[in-house]
Image (cartoon, rainbow, N blue to C red; front, side, top):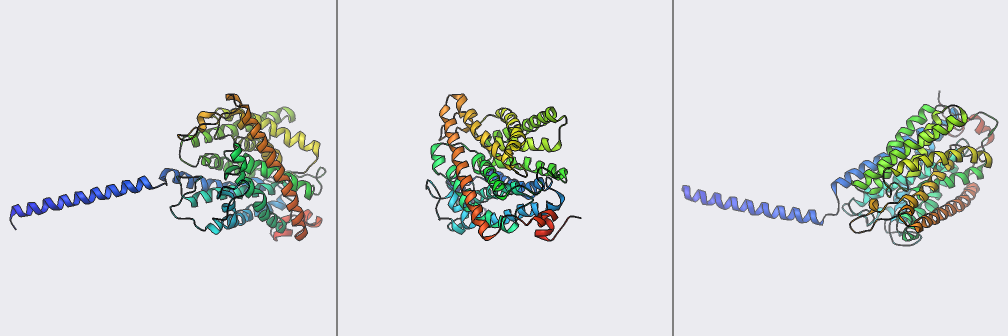
Length: 444
């Protein structure tokens, strides 16, 4: 072959390669344009899902275990472990579908039972830039920790079998409907109730359910006369640290993307935890003469729970104010209010999460700032300070509805469960300890 012929062939090969590359680039660009899944959003949400799961195991397990007596540590951890496993399975079977698919005012659809119809590259209309399977998993972690939180109110005295049956029924009849009402397009969402990450769905819901369970089951043996001091607060401190970090995924992840709103939510969350801890510590110092470790971690968790519903609607510095109010209000609820009412909420689920959730949900209606929630296709939401007092009334309505449904349904479910599995352990088992009597194990 002559040199000229060779050059002609080379030229045509080069042109052919360029044409192929052009088509490949065009196809890639077209695919990228059609693809709904964003890599950065997906990476962040995978991380957020992992650290929210960490909030229950080991975070909440250690937090709760450190505050009970030694003879009940393993039983308390077992409830968190079992709730994680049970709720995960039931979430796939029916929870996700009923909470987050369909457009019903009261409950979702059956389109995703057992995750049927879910595609690998499909997305949910509620989270358009991440795989639907990831959105399902992220919401699963919220359901898990909400069920586990309720157990703290009845620690030291509830039968494990009764707890398992109650957890399954409570997920179906209490958590799933409220999640749909607020986050799944139900009637509270339509009304405009603001709950960025779980003031109503998680904290009020769990707090009210815990209080009802504590009242139905009754106080611990020796409550008010015997020493029920925590066995090992160092475990609770470690648990608090895990919860604190996990809350960045809890609130920041609720932006459902790697964006500035997530950063604002995380910043407000951290500041609220800090001022909540400092406020509780200061109040305890003034009233009791010494700041306790239990008080500091309780204040931090109160700040975290209270900022949750408002975190994605407020400016970062609002977290300072909300945490300050959370520390004071929840301190009062866990001391004066609890003592006057005489109920035995073992680990103060109502005082911290219930009261904190109520406070934060109402404050979202006060501090909501339009610039924070504004998006290209939606206007921002303003609260009382920006001249929209109606939002505060809407928030109050959401609080009342959540409390009413959670309280009434929880009471009914506990009575039903008691027919099949007695709610409370025998007195001698409670005295010996649940680790040995329910699980046949004990810490050495």
